[in-house]
Image (tube, rainbow, N blue to C red):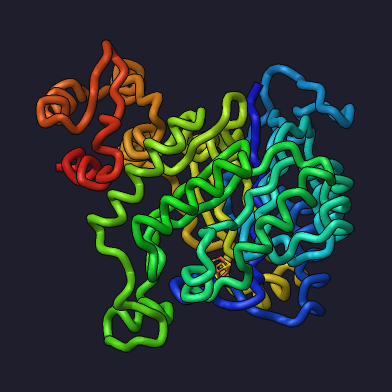
Length: 407
Ligand code: SF4
């Protein structure tokens, strides 16, 4: 059985965070409905739209020999032999949409594909969580919330231009639980302006007190084109560029997260992700395992197993194109054997279970043993038979390992 993940991009935010330069817009609410309708049309008409955009989706989603039975009684062969088991609404801030909008998109997916939905995730920012909305999310089929906590320090949240404050986090978590969301993931960012060891420790301690099922810790990535990025390059004090922790401090924060989360029973399964037993992100695992996923919406990326492509970023242009029956695809490319091998190594090594070097050697007809022997001798990776994984104490500097791997 082949499973397929569906990603839906919602490129709207309430405001722009100081470090971010994603293709997301702060727009009037009136823009949401036409956007949702365009996404539903893209879902409904995806075979024709992809074919017209010259995407070789048949190669990736060709009917399987076996006919699978989806939860809606539709044989999976109708949707290319794939069974959709995960949906992820990401952004932007998809929790800005009305719950009814999200329901429309989930229902369109159920009508179009063979589905056996196990995990339906919504990225939600704390200030957007309300009782009625959360109940609507559950009615729409959402069973997991990726919660944009980022920090428990109001000073850090304010400096980063986030809309919520610590009190919003405490207010929202019981609302989500009462609505029936039994799988909540907290995002934290290490490296926000004004962050110090003490405030980071406190954020970790508060997170553990609220006991989410899953945790993602990201190191702050400042986009050069963002307001903070420009201040870091050109100087100034408005966005607290001078108070961004150093790389060494960020590595220390990451290591502190490793120890604290590990001590609280979270299993570290991917460089940036920890989970209580049974709560690894099924959808995100598909990215690291190079499994197929289809992205809908402006800027959404897709992978068929053979090709990768992305929709154009501009939301207004996306809506106009879909309304006129055209999919604005860009970055369409067939993954070469060499690229596929690189992806196997880089994406595979992000997972702490490691990679099976024997399998990769057989599949790609390459010899990797020598490369990994050198990395193991340098203490960057650990080997156990055919399995190679990043050395736990080197995870905070994993980029160094990847650089060595490329040599
Ligand atoms: S960081 Fe997220 S919430 Fe903030 S502007 Fe960027 S996409 Fe929007």
